Amino acid sequence: MPTLIVEDVPPEVYERLQRRAAVEKRTLPQEMLHLLQQALREEDNPPPRLPDFIPNEEISAPFDLPRSSQPMYVGVYDGSPRLPDPFSSDLVQ
Image (cartoon, rainbow, N blue to C red):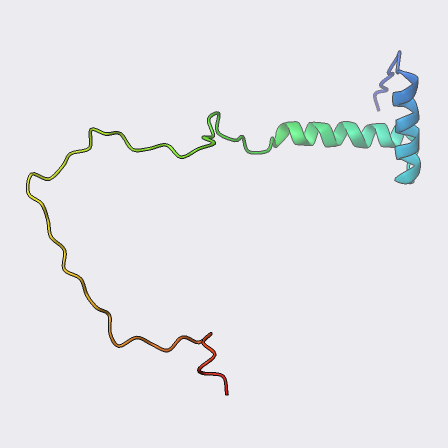
């Protein structure tokens, strides 16, 4: 099996790796291999990208929408009889 040597590791990074390996109950080389495998797995399956443009406010429609030449009148439907309101205090007995 090939060997990988990492040189010039800053002391704080080395200490964090040691602590992480101890928490995970692994040796330092096992923890390094685990982290490398995890990073390569994430590289092979990147998370879905967000769109480049996400509006932070409502965007209005363009003003050049076609308009009808004739107005259209709409009748109103009363909707009676209405069903009783289930949250009304009149129904609670």
